[in-house]
Image 1 (cartoon, rainbow, N blue to C red):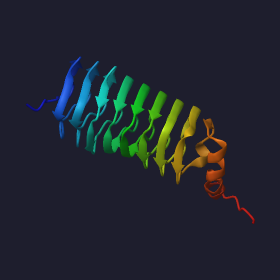
Image 2 (image 1 turned 180 degrees about the vertical axis):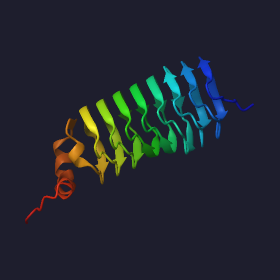
Image 3 (image 1 turned 30 degrees about the vertical axis):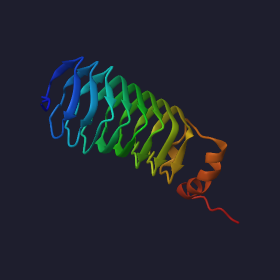
Length: 196
C-alpha cells in the first residue's frame, strides 16, 4: 500500500517506504522519521520541517524542499536530481554517499553540515551561508559559489571540477594542491592576466 502524505502532516516516528512520488507534504513536520528506499520524484514538501530524521537510499528527480528546515538529520546513499533546497535551513545534517545532481541551495543556510563521499553535480550555493561545513571525499562538479558567505568551510578533502564563484571562497580551507589546480580558474574569474 502506497503511503499518503498530506500538506501540514505531523508525523512522529514513522517509517516511510515505497512510492511517494508526486505527493504534497508542504509545511509537514517529520520528527524521528525514516524514509527508506522511497521514490521521491516530484515530491512537493516546501517549508516542511525535518528533525532527527533519516533518509536512506531515497531516489527521484524534481524534489521540492524549498525553504524547509532540517535539524539533526542524516541522508545516506541518496540518488537524486533537481532538488530544490533554496532558502532552506540545515543544521547538524550529514550527507553520506550517494549522488545528487543539480542541487539548488541558493540563499540557504548550512551550519555544522557534513558531506562525506558524495558526488554533487552542478550544486548551486549562490548567496548561501555556510558555517562549519565540510566536504570529505566528495566530488563537486561545476559547483557555483557566487556570493556565498563562508566561515570555517573545509573543501580540502574534496575534488573540485570547474568551480564558479571562486572569489567567494573567503572563509574556506583548501589544500595546497587544490590551490595549484584552481589557480587558472581563479586568475580568470578575477580578471588576472598571467604572463608566461
